[in-house]
Amino acid sequence: NAGVMQNPRHLVRRRGQEARLRCSPMKGHSHVYWYRQLPEEGLKFMVYLQKENIIDESGMPKERFSAEFPKEGPSILRIQQVVRGDSAAYFCASSPRLADEQFFGPGTRLTVL
Amino acid sequence: DQQVKQNSPSLSVQEGRISILNCDYTNSMFDYFLWYKKYPAEGPTFLISISSIKDKNEDGRFTVFLNKSAKHLSLHIVPSQPGDSAVYFCAASQGAQKLVFGQGTRLTINP
Image (tube, rainbow over all chains, first blue to last red; front, side):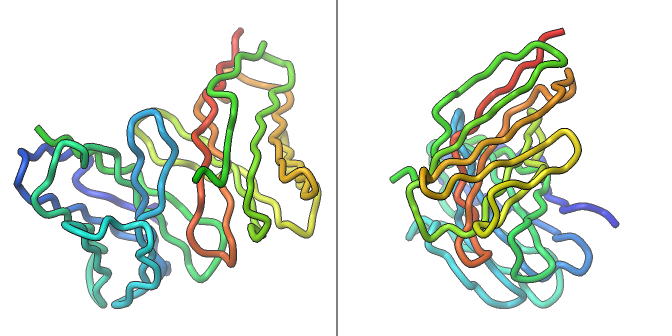
């Protein structure tokens, strides 16, 4: 059973470009969470999705950020018009049901030049 | 508003001795607490958890203690091994949804 997969592992964008981060949850997991880790800080919750539904987006910046988890395919975190402050590691986690233990992917390291 | 705090950014322990990592929280509605271990360039790996109805949970070398009145939990690793060197994150949740993480403690096990 493969773990949570994220791609790309590293992403470099120039200011103003768009970044798309993908997350494939573990097989059988229908709950997906996105977290962001800034340098020297802990992980901060961004959004919680189930298939085709956003359940909690209280940690998402109001502008430029969006997330989806379609019926088919991976979950996507999209950042439009990136700025240098978006440079961070973005982690996706999944769980099989509404459960406390979340399994994390390896992360995508976004660098904005 | 830092609801989960790990006040020690780093900890150094001799191999074979006990490592104790501490975590404090402010939100009394948290009902589940977890510890994750993280190596550089990897995602966090789940270690051990505890429900708020318990005060201790043990799994091999790892034991988590919860003191609800003090809003404090700790992770004990005994005996400590070189492979335990990593960053440890404490996390808490309410109603099994989003996790709130501490800032992490970097543990170094010295041979």
